[in-house]
Image (cartoon, rainbow, N blue to C red):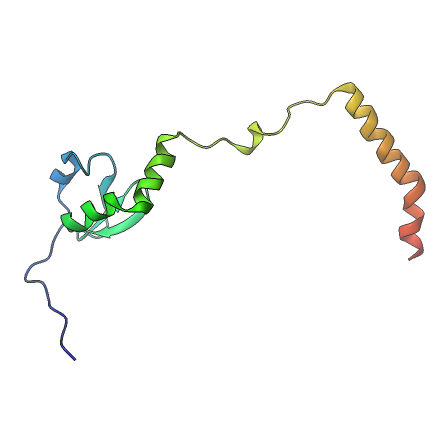
Length: 111
């Protein structure tokens, strides 16, 4: 089997890439490894090769993640719940709970 071709030099992350028009805004360094770079949108680690970074920027995964990030932050679950109950709804729920307690509580004990 043929051996894998080894690179003559190691490619390192360059701060100048952060000002490149195609990479600006989403590229960042990986602090623990200078041969890697971080896509801030996809939250993935990439090799610090400019060609790989440009290809990632054109990938479907990155394009969709970029659309989601431009849409703004997602809503919190508490925004979907109603803050208060109306008086009529409280009365109706209490009546249902009382009915269940009165008529169904002994049925579960017998079994």
